[in-house]
Amino acid sequence: MHAYCKAHGRRRKKRRIAAILLLVFLLCALLAAYFQHNVTKVLIAVSEATMRAHTTVAINDAVYYTLGDGVRYEDLVTVERNDAGDVVSISTDSLKINKIARDTASISQSNLRNLSLDGIPVPLGALTGIEALAGVGPRIRIRIIPVSSVVCEFSSRFESAGINQTKHSLYLNAVADISIVMPSRTENFAVTTDILVCESVLLGKVPDVYLQGSPGGKLPLLPE
Image (tube, rainbow, N blue to C red; front, side, top):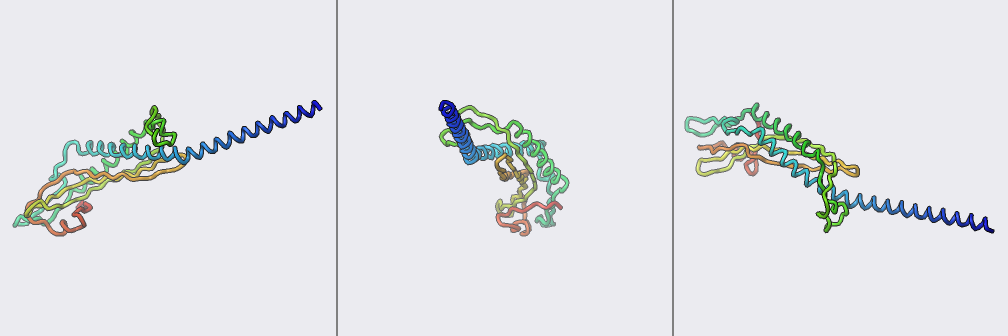
């Protein structure tokens, strides 16, 4: 009888341990599901906002470096006129334009990699997934894997500036495609930045092909 009680007690103890282990497993599964649904969403949102800010800084710094010495309108654009003083053609210096676009894209990507090395600062309260606690607690840095690709190109815009006056502006358009790679998911987004490089007011009649080439007067700039 005594041996039976001891065996019965051991079985009950094993069942309790099994029940505790099952409860712990279910609790871990619930926490994992909660983390997947809430915390990952918070991390993606914070990471995207941070990377957007980093991208803007990286591109602006690259533009400041490539155009730091100042680029005049005459350095990039050649305007030809007829005897009456009207504009007959507008051409660009393809070597200078391509170099500026290429250098800006390369430096932007390098800056973006350097800015991302320190990780993303996230308030500890944000990891709870509760909006009221999103900004509470010390900041911890979470390492992510940002994958970026920056493409730069020039565009041209013509706007009326008065009678027989047309403002011609050159913009550097930088598009950064960013991918945030995390164990549970990957988020992709793009950051577009338009930087005015130079502009000039053209006196005299400008051919309609420039003024009416596209809605809004903004045209891709094709070097000639």
